[in-house]
Length: 365
Image (cartoon, rainbow, N blue to C red; front, side, top):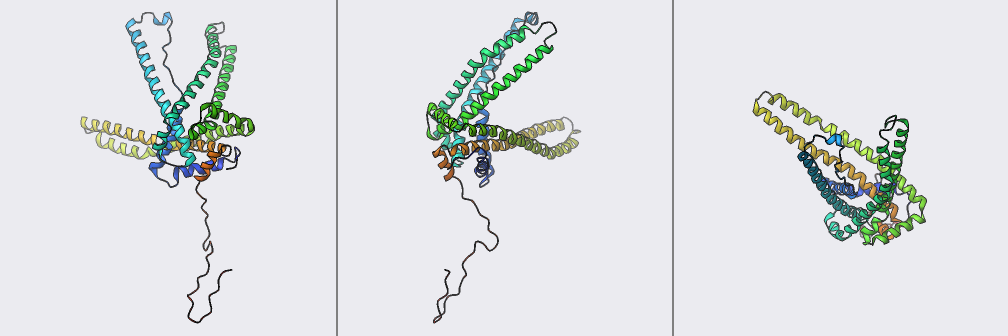
């Protein structure tokens, strides 16, 4: 497979997404593969939110019973522990599915279980990188963030108020700097995920080897890698926005039949006494659960399709620079189907069988 530029890889990635998800189209297979991409992205990023109970000032805690404060602290600790456990579970599942998705899209297979079992040991290596990456981010950003926060807190009661012109300008600069830092972190993570993870997923390479190969690609073609990252972010934003619009439109349209049924049931049952109200409440809860499942199904299908395209785009950009991956993409790409007009392709003329004593039939040169 020849190396593709960042723009040339878009077309094959779109074709691969269609072939992977819908050739042949089966609802069960389509939803399964879209769900793999969806939950790989949902749990693949380490986003743990810790519920911290901030210390209240003396004026705020004056008169509050100690037992109530103890209850709040215990409740916050329990919520934090539960959130941490759920976050770690999602991190493991999402990280493992990221490895699975790379191989599924590269080979265009739909069997998830064999690949899921094969990447069991590799998952911990990928999770270890994420935790190390998070630790490096904290070590870099916390020494810069804490003094800024303390500065704003210290000057919150200065003359002119916290929302004076100078403080607003400082807040804008701080927010702009935070956005730039988050963008840089996202770009670095995206670069590692797209250009280093396939080496780990397909060859079980060590983390240092995969990062070394990624660095060689970046150093060889820095312009193409930069263009790829730009297109990756722009295409993801455009396709993601289109998918969200489609999901909202479908969910709004799908509200019409249940709404009509609900109005009919209300007219029929709202005067039927307590039994009618119980039936209405039960049917409303059942209908809400069904609609929630439908909303999840629609969201997973559309968002998962967009995320699958992102993975296919990464693989096609990397494929020409990674021979093993390029060979997998070529061997798993179906041959093109040509549409001929009526009468084509031409067929040789059919002659009647020769009669005894007649000359032989002519043959095509």
